[in-house]
Length: 261
Length: 203
Image (spheres, each protein chain N blue to C red):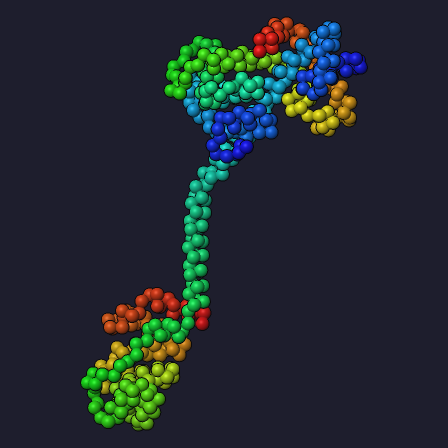
């Protein structure tokens, strides 16, 4: 390659690409007037460079558009024929996962804050002695126990009850309540169960609904959740006046206690 | 400049089109905002989907070159200007196909100055396309090295590596030979050269 031609070509390039400094530019313009070969070189180069830039721009635009269309195709084909099903399934899975997460979170909070004592206190209805209510015996034994209970001397009530060789239903029921107050759950269970047994044996219905409910409470207080749950569920599905106090939320919490306590 | 933003002003787009580093983002923006409406014009005037693609591409070439030559002054919106270019290009095409324009777009506002700029851009484009045919006669390596050097303005020290040449000097020699070949092609196509010369003289 001829050095003079190369030098001239590079000078033209630097001029067309705007890389000449002021001195070089003045020198280039002066030389252009005197140098026919340089003028011809520049004339052709100007045309060629303009066309090359146009060619380059077209190529770049084509590349950009091609990339855009490929990206669009990729987005369109991602759902595919079965994509909608997959998408709906994924959507449903996400919803289910969210619900599960919320439920687990809710349960976790409930478990963390749930206690047997709170659940018991929430559902316990302290029995109040009223004279003349369901009284089958009016003897001194019952009256003494009732009085102790009314005075909230539960220990005295229990002592009096335990001193009886053959306690009547009322005394047994009041003793059961006294045991609950004293947190003597096992004794409470036995007392309320005995109330139910005595009623059945004597074909009576003294304190039946109260004893049934308090028996369930006694099992709860004792931590015997499965027995408590079975009795509360039976109450809920019965026409007992206590059924209104046994709702699903309470049963759920009882189940959670059974699982986690 | 917030080129990746949702809404760009015409001034921001024009500035981005002058900067090669922002060309990709600005061209994508023009496609996203104007392709559908301009394609609709083509398709409702005897054009196909492919015509819409081709002529929007051609419209962008004309528009970007006018912007880079500072010939888009912002007297009208980019949308209107693009439409004016596309309409002229498509009218010329319809004439070639012995068809006429059937529907005008509601947002086309005629402006003499704008029309002159648009016509000038289209004339330039036609003249350049003739030289493009000559470039097409060059080998692939020639086209590549010339684009890298003159369009992308890549330094020779980078070009020789990009092209896989042994040295920078080999790349220089290659580029020189390619330009020489293109100049010879121009010399042998006097009509093409003359129309381009007129273009350069008249701006």
